[in-house]
Amino acid sequence: MYFNILTLFPEMFNGPLNESMIGRAQENDLLDINIINIRDYASGKHQVTDDAPYGGGAGMVMKVEPVYKAWEDKCRNEKDSSPVILMSPQGRKLNQEIVKDLSAQEGLTVICGHYEGFDDRIRSSIVTDEISIGDYVLTGGELAAMVLIDAVARMIPGVLGDENSVINDSFYNGLLDYPHYTRPRSFKGMEVPEVLLSGNHAEIDKWRQQESLKRTLLRRPDLLEMKTLTDEEIELLEDIKKDLKVKKR
Ligand code: 4GX
Image 1 (spheres, rainbow, N blue to C red):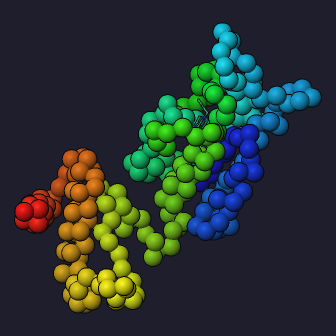
Image 2 (cartoon, rainbow, N blue to C red; image 1 turned 180 degrees about the vertical axis):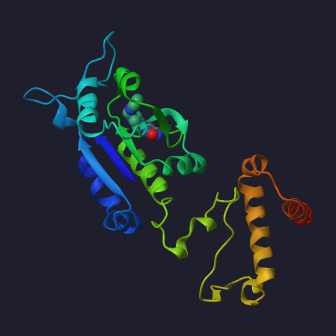
């Protein structure tokens, strides 16, 4: 899979995407990240990429031509009609379902905006999708783009080793992850749950499923409402709710 990133700050991408799993994925040619500097496509001696807004008001607006030219030169491709994603607080909010859908694409182009906003003709000419990583305001789209790329790239087969399989992810089955423990057995008086030391794998699986359900119920009940529960899960949830009521008394 490839990513084309249109940005005014190409250096920002150097660290995060060249380390760890995403760095390895690039070395193994599972992933190709092309960073394109929008400023290279700005005209004039000063290569200006922003301008004052028509109609007046505070703040600067990102110009349409440099972004359009960068896209035309580096991303327009007859064989491939990959989505062009604008990172923006006005987009649909990113979640694991969107991440999974995007990972099925051959490639993605991601535009990182800066300044107070964008000439809206960037949207109407090339953008096909607009994504937000959450309801808060960043100084630019770069960090948001890196979040998107990281989440999408790890879904590509082969990017994660077997040990880090996505099957165990929080959200993979619509529930939060269960608690994990490793050595030592005892730390400052806090013990590892006995069942995990029992060697009884049926019991361990059941405990993990219960803990996943309990965490989801307590922290993210909205996830339970969205999920179709199995009969077993419904039963376990009833037990957990009873147990929690007993503890409250
Ligand atoms: N999730 N920002 C983009 C500039 C901007 C403004 C309007 C396009 C249109 C953000 C987020 C985010 C701040 C990135 C404003 N670009 N991006 N930037 N939340 O806050 O993705």
